[in-house]
Image (cartoon, rainbow, N blue to C red):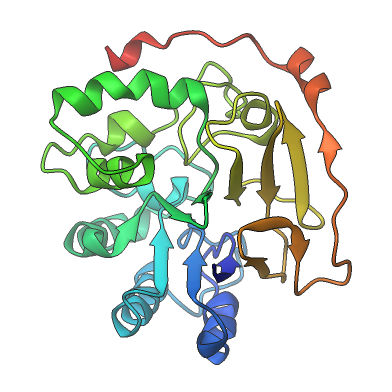
Length: 268
């Protein structure tokens, strides 16, 4: 069993990376949860997106079995065959970021499975995974578990990551079951989760928040200036925030806010 450090949406800052480097020997795994690029601070011109990407990849190279870098929707937007329509997209740097990501894509993943917990940028829904299984089979993408199959799809020569991971749901904000692991929002995810336990970022919360739906748990860790530890896969125990135990909220009422699951023919 393991001690995992999660670094949520980076957005071109170095705070999380510096925190992780200082404590690297305290953890079994360190997960960058994505959205490394696209700063939300218009006054911050101290570093380029490639600067930050480079530092994370160097950290990964130093600790290849400990550090894992997960792609976010902002990162994906710079890859070929992907939709660049995200907020704060930096067209001026697009060519440099695209070239860096293409050259270093082997150092990035979509998700990671540790102690029975699935980590990804936004979360994995049952509907999305059911919809893509045919495409994975068509492209000959295999793996010993779901996480491995999804990551192999990112690194496949078929270059189908745009079709798999771009914004694809019926709700413009991402609140639909068809959305993939870089885009889905909490209301849809908690009503249609693929796994018993997930840890995600993507949507900001004021504090680490554990939601329960269909007897499955999702911990949301995108909190400003907080980096959450996961101990032995226990989503109830948060080691480095003031409250050791978080209240689990039943979210079934959110069913009323989103549509029923539908098959999305885009993946046929």
